Picture 1: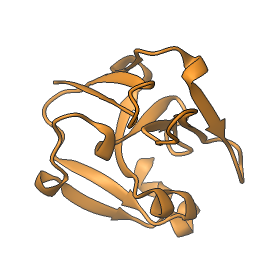
Picture 2: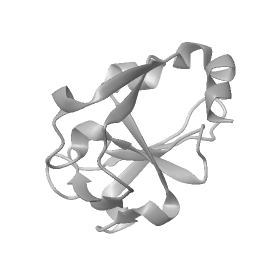
Picture 3: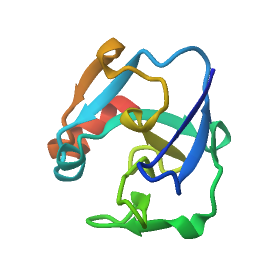
Picture 4: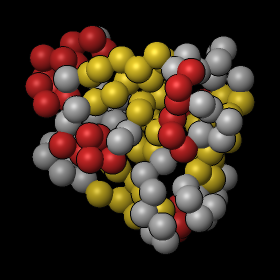
Length: 123
């Protein structure tokens, strides 16, 4: 299935093409995700396509500096990023996907506060 998404002001837009509909997301409780209300949909680099120039993005890194948190330089919305758990792919914020109803998704908690032990689920 192909999804479109982006930020609030429309300056950042992307497409996500994955097998089947999105039916579950991860809800991480780390300091970054919990403050943003981020709901993770993971994608490979091949499944994600940025439709707008990278110049519309700003980025933020902290801690191990593996994750690259992208956000719109105009409205500040964090619609996708390169996650520490999947540094060769992306995490897309399900809240930023057009036509996706959050109430229809199974929301799985992820213990990002204890990232090292919890991330074993990605191995």
